[in-house]
Amino acid sequence: MTRDDERSRGDAGWRMADLAREPLSRPSAAEQSSPVTDEPPENIVVIGSGGHGREIAEVCLAVARAEPGRVHLVGVIDDGPRAGDLARLISAGIAYLGTVAAWPWSSYACSFVVGVSDPTARRRIANSLVAHSRPATLVHPDATLGSQVALGPGCVVFAGARLSTTVRLGAHVHLYHNVTVGSDAVVDDFTTVCSAATVGSGTHTGAGVMVGAGAVVLDQRRVGDGSTVAAAACVVGDVPPDTVVTGVPATARSPKHSLRATS
Ligand SMILES: CC(C)(COP(=O)(O)OP(=O)(O)OC[C@H]1O[C@@H](n2cnc3c(N)ncnc32)[C@H](O)[C@@H]1OP(=O)(O)O)[C@@H](O)C(=O)NCCC(=O)NCCS
Image 1: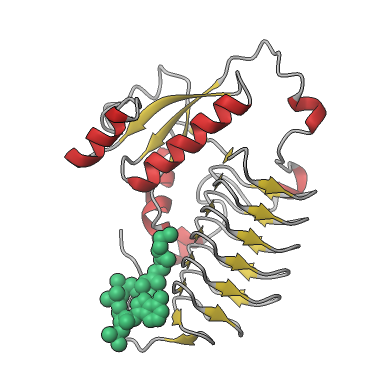
Image 2 (image 1 turned 60 degrees about the vertical axis):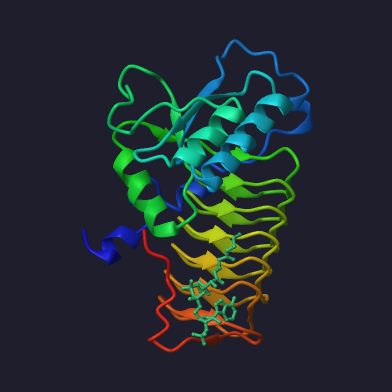
């Protein structure tokens, strides 16, 4: 599969246009106040035992506390967990479930969240699981969503994130703690926005983008697919695809600084 193929919408079995037909927003207050249902909770496994994966497991636990019966964290899957990460899982009371290949996908009904911050690795893992399971979407109870916010499958919104009205997130977008996304902004598939970054109103952030911690993308700007906005950068113009920008105002790094994260 070429990189362009990988980037095409729907490679995770889903298309941005689906949001128009099937918006996914947090339940209304009335819906949340009557949680009694015959439906069993959604079993969720998190792929990745590193810090990002464990943070997502905690988001899942927070949702389970806030909305009893909605989700159940089964545990964490990782093909090569580090000893320190395993110890941290155990001390947090979270089960390590083994490898992706060993997990009984066909006989255990569950959905998955890819707990990997790097967009390229997240895309690769999510695409490899499409045949086995479906992605879950998690919004921490301490995040706030405006009206008509649409979240694609596999999205995770951490505590303190603020999404304004009519924001649209593609599939497997991860918004870390205290991220702000302005009105009418679009964030495409597999993009990661790190803590305390601000993505302005009317912006279009492409697929597989990494927006660094504390960065600002000013209103109406576009960030091309596969680009990286460095921590604390301020984007005042459009960013082309596959470009690393740093500083205030943000400028492109020279090619010798190929700063894109790799899987
Ligand atoms: C830009 C970034 C991707 C570079 O990562 P890297 O490939 O490891 O690069 P290095 O740390 O080796 O630095 C390479 C050069 O970029 C500069 N640089 C790195 N980060 C920078 C930043 N945020 N702003 C300005 N310059 C930066 C370094 O000073 C260095 O410059 P030099 O070659 O002139 O000495 C990374 O620093 C970054 O900002 N990532 C965003 C992710 C993030 O915020 N993570 C936090 C977790 S929420």
